[in-house]
Length: 315
Image 1 (cartoon, one colour):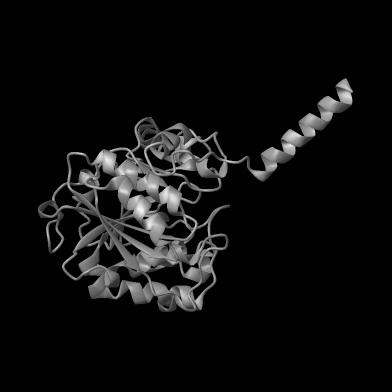
Image 2: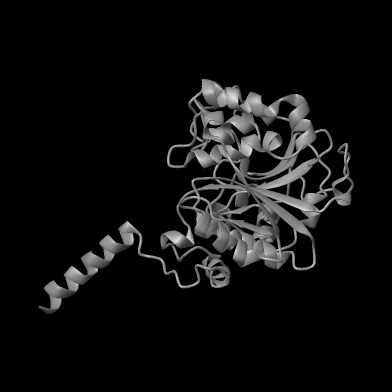
């Protein structure tokens, strides 16, 4: 496994000659996590030029203005409205919204003058400048990414239908929540249409992530885990600790990007995440600073049981 990205790009256009560009995607209901992610990104790039394009659908103009206010003068922010009809018939992960598929449309929604972008999920926290990630040499690979913490291989307890997707069971499998995308290569090779074809002809466990792994198999560059520290790695539940201990330990000690995967998200009342406190610190710098999390359903049930026990015990 590679532990440090190279710094000289062999892309047709050297990214080092262009400002960092990040892409994100949300629909209604995910405005607050997006505001936190963007605020953390603005803080991390106080001395580095960074622009962000957000693919969105159903987000109110009021919330767009609130987010713009939070990062005004610090990030060059652009909103791109997605035509949902473009994704008709494409399967997405159960439990996620169709916005999970927006990333696939980036090569055609971003201008042709844009040669590379870093895609980043909105349930993230940026803790360091993305300069090193931006200038990573991908060689001839179609994307750069980090292995999935829950399923580092195509097969496994948290894996997918690898047979149905045409994947070898021991094939490295990446998390699609952070991807370095050489857009010219995607356009040239028709990767958007190829990925949508997989999503329209198969119903897989992890939707866009499965389709992207199928299309990019054996042609993606594996990056250090600090660029996408997922929850299972952060709280020491992943197989990665046994396979790549040094890389995971380095990532946990000083992650560049924290990715709040699974249900262990601070805004859902899960305060036990190792980086929950940092998320709330960034929240305090947004227009949602006064927001407080409610208790998740299971915690409310446990509290009721405990209260009932106290009543029965003490009368």
